Length: 525
Image (cartoon, rainbow, N blue to C red; front, side):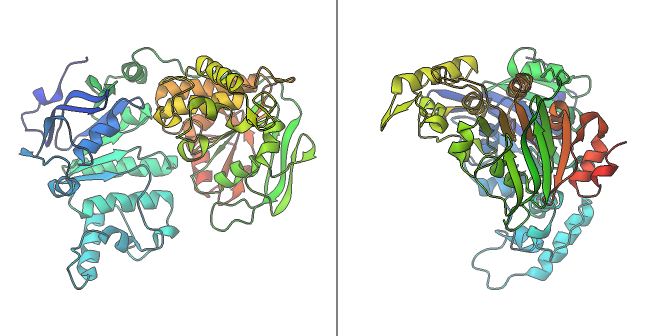
């Protein structure tokens, strides 16, 4: 374990002290005697792979779980275990990766929600509004109290989440993947805000998989692996490679993207396609061509039509205008037909859509091909063949956490994604024509994964491209878009820019296009 505890150099007592926190879930030791301090005005980055114990530790701190052993002190006073209200009253605030805001209510209503006693006869909106504006001014978070949350940008909604915590008097903030859905410009604004917060004495626990951001924004890093605190170190002088090695226990090689070979014929073409869906998540005159042997990466802030595009190409939505063709034939809005035509999907929501948690690994492995002669005959499932296919996926894609008989819900996020990836990319060897997929729709393929799983998934997509597949990657992660995209396009408000070669874009140009401030023809530097 890396030594060099910063509290030894700081004569001030810590604002937060966790001592020997231990938590078990049955045979799983989620937290193993973790001791950690946080100083006033410090940003501490908390890192670790999925399943390393970060969420459990934070849930204990916030009162959602009770530790089996250990204690927590806030500003020198013991924190009552298993009591979220006690954590809030002690000054702990949390901003979740997925915002918890009511779109149909105003900013002020969202901030006030839960802050007034139920027995109070009248809401003191005037005083609350004045307090909100004072907090916003103090921390440099401009806000319109009467604006409907549903009308705000993603960056503005995150600002409201921060204000909710600060309005309640938070002095210690826990930020869970705070830049996951922000444009680069919005991320820069957030970093400036965090600087103002720590300058005024607030302390922040910053949870992120983006190691460059971690080193930029934090003063100190703490790394968990398999439930243990394995490293603490100042951020200054620490490299991304060192952080990755601490997280996974060995050196991690980034996915190596070679230039795409000569692209083949168009596999899928969208011609002025619109969808009839209401709201922001719709397509508006989208044209795009996906060619064999090429990765097209689409950037954009979540909710601007990416889901509509992914579901359209997976047969789950229909076009109200325009034409979609697959291999020079009209595309049918039928998921089963698309699978039979060599279309593979990696959905955005692996828990809700990607797998059925109560089913076994082997059942999930064949779920999209269950009608194939390889796995069924008449009304009977060929269990032996299905389980052999699942065992092959588990072996070739290194799915850990159990074999074919294991319930899918017991897998970690990274291993669940490997199962979905294997299901998409591995054709049954018993089929007469066992060919790899011709079109792969990968929507947020590495969302929420640790650095080792990210590198693995990205390498598999590159290998599929090199094998001749047309690959569409839809991602909120700008680093992923730049790393994978042979051509890159940006989606905003249902419209898609021209797909230009990756080198024709700068990060700044992509960020502006994500915010709707730049047209496609202006993207080239």
